[in-house]
Length: 236
Image 1: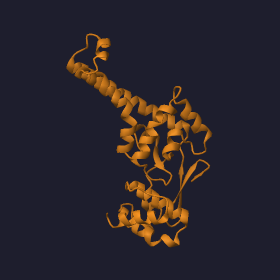
Image 2: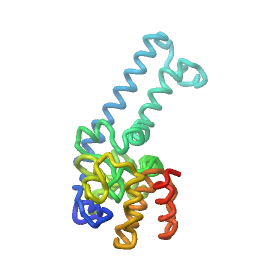
Image 3: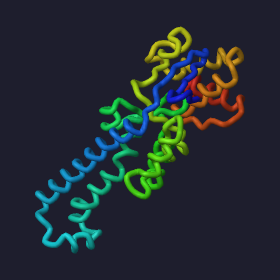
Image 4: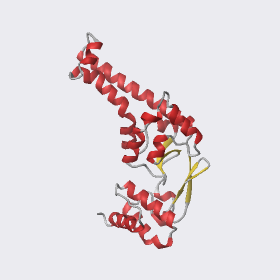
C-alpha cells in the first residue's frame, strides 16, 4: 500500500514500516549511471576484440556477415551487454544495479521484498514502451503523474523503486519472525501458527510475498496459500 510518497509494508503481527519511494530524479540518476556503465563495458569488449582479431577492413561488410565469429565478438556481444544489462543484473542482484546502488535506491515488490524473477523480466520487457518515443518519455510521464512514482513496467510487474537498505524479517518483529537470518521455514511456521489471529489482508500479503520469494505458485484462496506455506515449513 502506498501513502503519499511512501510504500507501507505490513508484517504478520501488524507492525508497519514506511519505505520512501524514489522519484523521477533518483530514477533518472540511477539510469544515467547504468547507461554509462553498460556502454563503457560494451565498448571495452569491442576494443579488446578488435585488438585480438585485428581491425576490420570494412565495417559495413562486417555488419553484413552476421554468421562470422568476428561479427559476434566485435558487434554481437557488446550489443547483448547493452540489451541484457538491466534484466540480468536486476535478477542476479535481487533488484539492484550499480546505478541503483550509487543512487541509494532499489526495487521491491508491494510487500517490500525483492521482486521475483518473473516480475523483473516483465518490468524490463516493458522498457520498450516506457522508452518511447525517446529518452524514456512515456515512462517518466507516467512516473510523474502517479503517487507511487511507477513507470508502466513497474505497474505491470508490481514493483516499486524505493530508497534505503533491504528490509529483513527482523525489521518487523524479532520476537515474531526471528533474527534477520531466520530461515523461511521458520517464518512460514510462525505465520501458520498465527493465521487465525491475524487480519485477513496482513496474513495474505505476507503469505503471497513469502511464496513468491521461494518461487512457489500462489493462488487466491486462503486454503491454497496455507498449503503453500505448509510446503515451505516442511521443506517440500
